[in-house]
Image 1 (cartoon, rainbow, N blue to C red):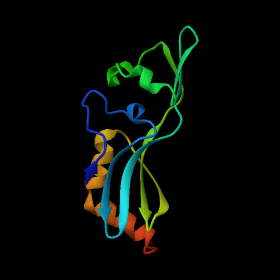
Image 2: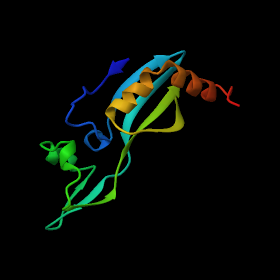
Image 3: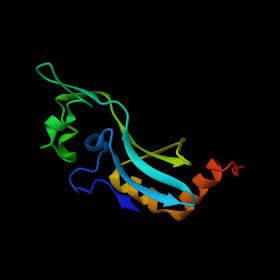
Length: 124
């Protein structure tokens, strides 16, 4: 497996990896990868807000900051496990809870084989 972004134990939430591929794994002609996907929109007091476009301005935050009562979450992102085969995107519609879960899924041979079967049309 190739890791694109190293694990930070204080930043496991997908919030910190918006629009970024964190890791990928090649398996039998497919590339499976975990990606921080989805729109972020958080209102903070004083008309301040966080979105995908300004999230880097909050690089000092950790997971423990995300439950702040002053924040109103309107949209949040997630980790999605997807794949490509012969350069074609394959939407697996599989979501991981956090960084560790996404990496665990990519390392899980049985999970990857099930997804490969679906991609190749061998699902039941």
